[in-house]
Length: 104
Length: 270
Image (cartoon, rainbow over all chains, first blue to last red; front, top):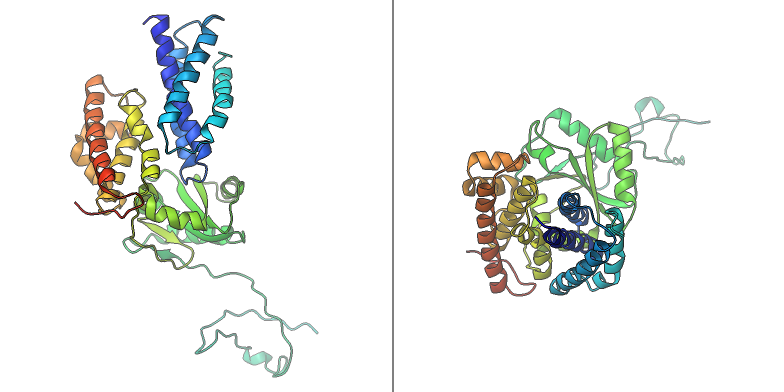
């Protein structure tokens, strides 16, 4: 798979993982909040496999961030059952995830 | 002069009572002032209606757990749920649910650490505020399934009333929808299929007992695949396609059931 396709796959997976993570934070009262946080971890592990396929350079990193921002915003907008605080923490969670993957 | 004796409180006609031992009747007499102090709280176990009696060993362990956690005055009810009650030996951990008066951020972690320290066993601890608990027992299929079998520290009646909270159910459906697009470990498919079976049964007002849910799952997947995904073993592409078809089918049924149910309405039958 080419770098561009891997980037798409990486940002798709990260988007879904972050949506679960943000859901578990904003719906903190949920009994199963920790379980949903684990859902996020499982998807993030899958994203990590894609991450390791390529050597991401300083030109790729801002592109990944931009794609992630657009995709995650769209995903969160669609999920109207998640509390609106989701948009307040979106940026922070993106930064944390990128840092974890050394993509910041 | 300090006169002391220990007795068990007994049930009286109008009041619970403590008798003064015969050999002390001249030491503690009518009109004397005494102080009564609780030394050890008696622990009883309250079973949910369909749960079979556990072994003496498991009962004693649960009593010790209740007695240990009862020291925390913020906890109103303590529940043991999950596979520890239903599996003879094949349980993963001991699921403890603490129902609290008010929201407590650290209770789960503190109770978990103390339990591990005291009993050296694998625990999973959940804490939830009482008001929220009663709400989830009506509206959350997963919570309802979790409490289909339990042992509680106090007598409790759990109603079978079901209320459809569309937002909550959509929240629960996020992962099954994701699995139509992304490939994760096989256990994720198992968990999602079980989640879907639970939600569908909730919406159809069917029993949410774990055995009924697992039996339903076994009828839709062949034995080998069921075992593989339960044990998180590697599965091939064609198996993933089979699982995705079942997920899609179940999602369609659930979406239809949600559409037909009113917002915050009651779950119905087929």
